[in-house]
Amino acid sequence: MLALTVNAGSSSVKVRLLEDTEVVNAQLDLPVGDTGLDAQALMDGLAEWPTPEVIGHRVAHGGARFTGPAIIDADVYRHIDELSDLAPLHQKLALAGIDAMRTLYPAVVNVASFDTAFHATIPPAASTYALPQDWSDRYGIRRFGFHGLSHAYCARRAAQLVGAPLAGLRIVTCHLGAGASLAAVVGGRSVDTTMGFTPLEGLVMATRSGSVDVGLVLWLAEHQHLSVHDIATTLEHRSGLLGLAGTGDMREVEANAAAGDMRATLAIEVYVHRLAGAVAAMAAAAGGIDVLAFTGGVGENSAAVRHKTADRLAFLGVALSDAANGDASGVDREVTRVSNGVTAGMTAGVRTVIVGAREDIQIAREAHSVGSSSGPAGTGPASGNHQRNSDR
Image 1 (cartoon, one colour):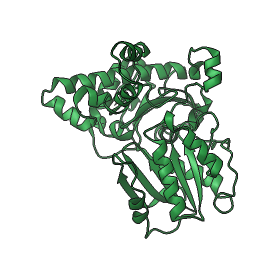
Image 2 (tube, rainbow, N blue to C red):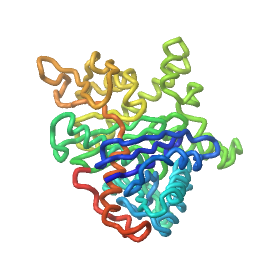
Image 3 (cartoon, rainbow, N blue to C red):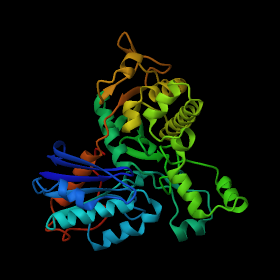
């Protein structure tokens, strides 16, 4: 079955045509400019491709309604649009991609795969903010979590790499890209994550601040007279690595630090400090850690971030092989320190792996699971409560 996947991120749109949900037949990457997605360029780029049998779209926010993939009809489309203010960097891009695919392939079923859906299994203790109950009820406030497609694939692939059943593992998955989040995955199910009601909570990211003191935000509004728009724009687009080091690209930050730039050095230390602390918190949520998995642009390519993070997590039994960690030959490999064939570390139990980000595979599987049995575009079931794949 040919599945077309459209992965709209904050800085690029990645399109893949997959056969049998895994083998890439064709691919196209387009940058996202200040004006958003160039829909015409997207359609022109796919003009010579074969017609897919189903199209899967990554959608950042599914709210409380969507706990699994959903065929996109008018009602689903409207709900995605209504959630745009909770994921402003992503939701409108996803809708633009959906519009383009409907124009180019009007007879093909479109399926939405939600980044929040994987985290629908998080228990109330982890998903609930300590706010008045009437606020939570009235406004639907809870911790949703994001990057679920990446975390789901990463956990499954990590289990394969260490040669153990996913059902028996406690995995902390680290999606470290322009956006960054962690997930505590027990037996293939998310039990906690670092992002919350919006993708702004949690780790330091490329241009996003991650978690900050709410009192700071109130102080800026009340005493410095900054508008809500100014604060939101700064936290989303001018903070994180960019705010600390002048660039949101970790490769540039590391190069500048190596050249003696103290701002860049501090940025890396802040990044790793938050990251290591959050990994430990995820391990606590999971009741321990068997596997630590790095994925995403930074997770896959920054040996320094992995090394510094592992050093801070030595008390959990994390230990990396310097040679394996520094090897730039590729992803989908283990980098655990070994001695005489036995995993090193205090507990001799934590395995560390690097997993190539393949959200396209997860999207294709979900699109196939609900789209292959539907009729023409828009005629299939639109429920967002389809059961997840058992190996997710």
